[in-house]
Length: 433
Ligand code: DLL
Image (cartoon, rainbow, N blue to C red; front, side):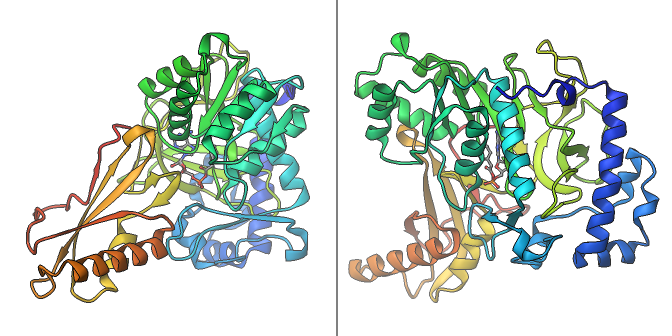
């Protein structure tokens, strides 16, 4: 159990004082050690000593995913490369990914916040945690792993896939805590049912799920099928990984670990800060990170913050579950996909029009993506062989761009709906919003 009462139940005044001190420190370090921030601050005429109150954070520039990509791979590091002992990258392979670097202290911090989150869910050193998140460049596997080990629970680092084996291990090892993405959880539950798993007699006491959007209906379904409460885990590679905010036993919002991550909500159109309770885009600042402190990162995730006392005793602000994104990013099979990547792939192929439609479905709780593509008159032929070849080519090009295989349907020229405003490029039938 990692119950940091001092940090988690602090009075708002004490917390704000701590946050200001850390913010001043982090801004100074970014200014002095990260050429990107140094230049940006100078261009705006803002200097570390201008940060005299927490509100002054609003004077600082935002950081976007594109900014991070431009300094690929290591341009955001604030320490010599030899001090970075682990790297991860954002999911999806759109152009260049975002690289996240961690020093020894950063990994300890990651373990601490994840451990505090797992503790909120009721996990302790008696528990056996089956971690189905991928171990690799994705932050899900390692982040949860570090947190679980910090608590002293037993981790089963099974990673994603081998679904039948997952159920066998869960039963044989007496797993008490499952960690999965909601979509993988639902798929696992189907297989579990086929294998005769009985939620009434399950040893599971908690489920941690996150990394993608879900609805209350999905949570209820997961809880029913596994016979255990499910808690929301939020995070993102750019800021750290899972463990930025996690839900407590109350299951009514996620506590943001505000002593390490400073949250703001901004209006999507004006980029102005919004008062508590209003929904907008979440912006996060690293307060404690050494290797790669990110300032005012626009997550594009839509949520709102509630500064209220929680029955669990924690005073940390509560964030509502993410209900949407301000951009068109989709998570398909846990991987971030932008429609623009599909367009980019299609534009590389002769004889293909850049008119396309993406249809995402979830048959049997597994994500599937179909891309309907218009061919040019000259290519639209009756020659099956040619059509098969072009479909394969398109699928390969798209896979190269986004990292996952999709189904391609070729359609006649001018058959996809044209729009006068924003084209409807994506039809998401998964009902997640
Ligand atoms: O998904 C980190 C993570 C791993 C979180 C395991 C929870 C569990 P990325 O791949 O960089 O990192 O994707 C970050 O995923 O900006 C959100 O859009 C979405 N996301 C993450 N957690 C949630 C959640 C990991 N609980 C992006 N609910 C974020 C809704 C989520 N969306």
